[in-house]
Structure formats: C-alpha cells, structure tokens
Length: 326
Ligand code: SPD
Image 1 (tube, rainbow, N blue to C red):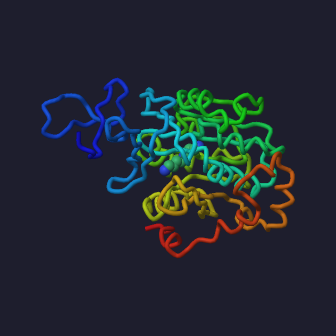
Image 2: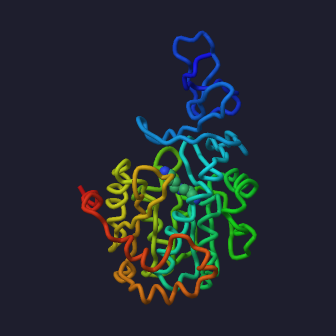
Image 3: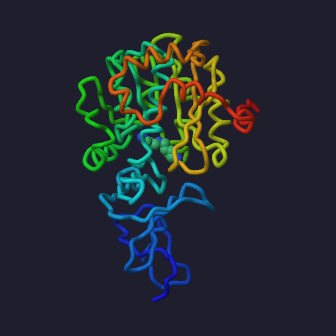
C-alpha cells in the first residue's frame, strides 16, 4: 500500500461534489473534500480556491449530510475544536468564530447606538444572534436562514456557538430565502447583518445591487446600517469591488472594515459597511465605550473592543484600490 495521499472512495448517498478516478474502470464517485491514507485519520480539504487551500486532520466526524441545499459537515479538529463546513468551505471553527461574530455584530450595533430591531440574513449556526442578543437596546431579532438543517445540526452539535440564542424570546427564526425576504417583508430594521456564505451558488444573490437596494428600503429610518461579509481581499478581490459598486446607488457611506479570522485563510477579511448616516462610520472610541459598557457579558468577548472597532476601519491602499465604480 503506497503512502500517497489520495481521494477516499465514499458513499454516493452523502455526495457533495463528486468526480471519478481518472482511468479507473470503477464507477464509484470520489470525494475530493476528504482524502487520506487508508488506516490513518483523513484530511478535510477546503475547496474554496481552485489552486490553494487549507486542510484539517479530522479527529471525529460529528455529522455529515447532503441537505436539500448543500453538503454539510461538522467535525472535530485538535487545534480548531469543532469545524462546520458547507459545500467544501469552512464556515466556522469553535476556536476563532468569536472574532467574526463579534465584529460582524458589535460594529454596526454600537455604531448605530440605539438599534431596536435587527435582521440577520443567514447565520443559521446562531453565532451572530448570540452576539446581537447581548445588546439590551435590541428588542427583536429576525434571523432568516434558507437551510433549516444548518440550524438543526448546529443546535445539536454546536450549542456552544448559539449559547441559547435560539431559545431567546427576542429571536424569531424564519426559514426562507433571504433575498426574497428583504424584497417582500413589511417589517423595518435598524441594523441588517448579512452573514452569508461566499458568492457561489445560493450565496451569490446576497451580493447583488437588487438585494442591497431592497435592504436600504427596509430600514426604520436613515440611520440604518447594513453589514456584509466580503471575503479575504487578497484572494477574493471581486467581492469588495462588486459590493462597493452595488452599494453605490443606495448608500451615501460605503466602506469596509477588517478582522483577522485564521480559518478564513489568506489574510484579514473585509466586512462591508453601508449606511445613509454620515456619522455612523466615525463614532469616537469614548462614545463607543459608553455604549459598549451597556452590553451583556462584554468581559467574555475575545476580540471586539471600541479601539479594535475604530482601528478596523483603517484600510490599506490595496483594499482602497478595490473600492471603485468602474
Ligand atoms: N469564506 C467563508 C466565509 C463564511 C462567512 N459566513 C460564516 C458563517 C458563520 N456564522
């Protein structure tokens, strides 16, 4: 038996992306996301980028399933704890999810200062909801998730991520297409958080001009703030340029801020920040600190501070260069 790393034959009923061993007479599909040497722990290979990526030795697979929408896997890893991946792309690990969830939630909420009603698009693992619910100003949160399996399996296998958010009476879960929801809802929101997957397949619509236009229409007033996840700009520069351009017709302020999440590999990631409130981007550290003092469990946070908030908006020229209309 050679020690060569190769795809492992797997059960076609749990198919994510399949292909066949070249030159083989076998018709058994192979799974490029999970490879390894027979008799040793398998690797999980992220397939987000065509020619480069990260991989994890799987300690134990907690759940894997082809849901109605995507290939979902939750496994454990020695360093990163529990790992959730959808269609070959890492969505979170319990080691570093707090960085992303704290920054995508507290930056817009504390920049707003009095958000009462919050919309989360995606976020079926409950991590964004957990952070949003720390804010006492927030009376109602609507979380719109397209795939109920993400919620169900996260509740079962990742309870430390949602930390009871799904049982909180201020949170309402709607199973629906987020783009359709913002187009049709009569509800109004102070902050909209788009916790999307990458713009591949179902996530693509959440980066369009039409979607951002519909978000702008459902703000309670002109102080509303929209935040989005825009990937790692060194590897996904188009996500920044497309969102910048598509925010254009609807928002007077359109910028990005940064957070370093180790398992969103390739450098710091960018989060989009769009609003018609000219002051929201520049709230002072002193004012943010007063607002921050009011949130529940602030001593438990591992990344967000008012200082990190202000610093995150400092953009290097290589990101500023991506913020262009043509
Ligand atoms: N490249 C992966 C970006 C994933 C962003 N969404 C993560 C969901 C965590 N709640």
